[in-house]
Image (cartoon, rainbow, N blue to C red; front, side, top):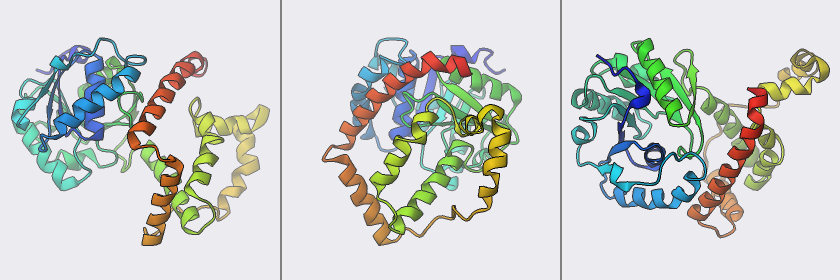
Length: 318
């Protein structure tokens, strides 16, 4: 029998402790979970602890429901050790079908048969990922957004064999750790947000490659324009407002014909050495000598304040 209350899942496993895995660890610790973590590179343990300590001042102002207790984090030496007692398993290894499929086979064999297995994949199809997994009806995708410890969105994608019960239990579990789950109705490569981000990213690469703008120009175009709106309302509600009193219908009548204009390319450009150098040098200039850690702290501090502000307004729209 599967556990009846996913909200009460106390023991979770995190497999893969890079940026995303550590982000999950922090969110789980912030909700008083016992976390069993495993990575084939055991040295990442030190990096994870360092990142937990760096982020906690921001986390405790936002999502934390308890004080930091590092005794709740158990770094394990094998997948079996990490998963054998876990109620919920969050996989966070690299985006590679062969790697994930083989890993899920192992996790399926070593974990409890009633444990939910969730992959943090950002675009791979769950049916394929879990094709060798024991009891695939308990397997699902839980795609988060970086930084996982602050951003509330998580996309839930089920495979062909995933049970309705597991979809619902996964939804409730993520809600219980202060996340806003979005259920993708059918398997879709890239899911939702990453497909949108990928389109924007590809267009940006073309613009930079062809010399129309720098990385800073394009970032400013988003930061000072649509990005400010997007933190409260997405593309469709924004365009609804663009139509005036009659909303989306008028917007489509007015701007619909522009969809036929060749403004976008969408097909990714070749990552030439010249383009790579433009991207690397451009973001280096934007950083103004600050390290990735320093910029991450600025971002996290900003997100904490932004999330507070959004809470004041989102209930009026959602």
